[in-house]
Length: 195
Image 1: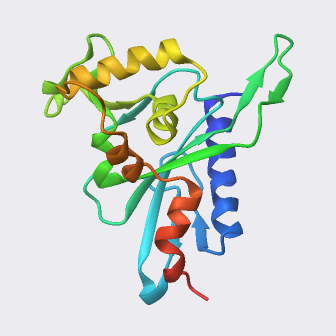
Image 2: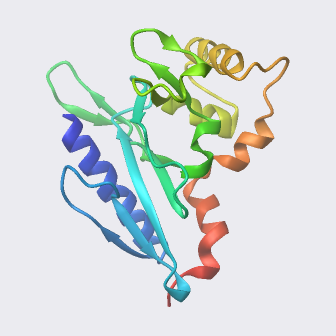
């Protein structure tokens, strides 16, 4: 499945989940948009979402470019479609899609500034050639503390600790509060739904 189809599937899946939870959501269409989904809450408060989809969190990192992290009420939704491609191009599903939601202002706390060529370095935040990168599988690890791909996660954990100059154990409680599941999102915003 190509990148455009993956993104489209992810956006529509997340859009359907918001409606399933009873939110007044609107999806935007097009390739050059900055916001994928808007949610209208009580008192006309608006939330916006940038949806980032992957066929599987096991494959490749996610380059976020230079997103508007400081924009109020803006969120990033990372969708694992759990798609497995067979050698004959047939697609299999490895379970239901999964998503993790992060407030834009907090995204930097779980992502890393880097250049593709030289890798990870924390002094690149103000470098125009650097961009924000995220290991999608890492979100699930930080949230749940488990992974099926321990070797990859171990490498990511070491890079994450090195990037943040962390010594000792990672404060998983802190990151679990930053990374939301659909249910976490509902627990925060359910009282603000438009009736």
